[in-house]
Length: 296
Image (tube, rainbow, N blue to C red; front, top):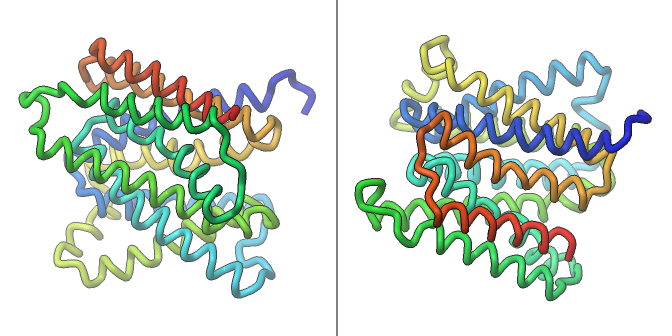
């Protein structure tokens, strides 16, 4: 592929697609509970990835070691079944804008866990970047009025958001030894299918199992569930992988994080979320922090 900056363009498109997906997930959260939403997302995304692999002639059950499968399964349960469910809970409480600022902690968490468990280096710039992101969360949420959300719910939303991002980062670190030596699409499929199967088992014994499985039947909720899943759990993932293939990983990652900008813009336009001066300052700080963490 000899298109100038093709990987960088794909990474920017990925950021826009993911931001659009968050709008649909936010609307879905108004009528669909977090667990049911995540179960639907993972089920449909698993089907889409399996179909894609069959069309492309890719292996779904690769000849890999049992240890590799176990690592990816654990990563999928932590990062997809657990983290995504909590993320949707946080999104429902905080709204798209503030939730996205909290999610910018992902890179600092990945780098911090890599430093602790993988022995990777941690630079001063990365520490400054992490501090900027934490400051952004504080500035964005410190004066959220009681009309928007109570302080108690705000604290719960931030806690769930931070916990979900930490779990996502941990799932990446868990899977990294396998990711480094295996096809990324195969790893994605195993993690996704594992997370979906575990959620299905939990759903069978869940007191609201009827409601959870009802989301798999055609309904008016699909108006937001299907576009959100196709955009966020499938297209964004495929475009993200393509961006990594045609651009340097550090550059692609930095451009991907511009989704925080598009989320604020889309949330103001489509969800009618107030775009205040504090949110603007938080946006600038979080984006600056992302850049420092990435290039550090």
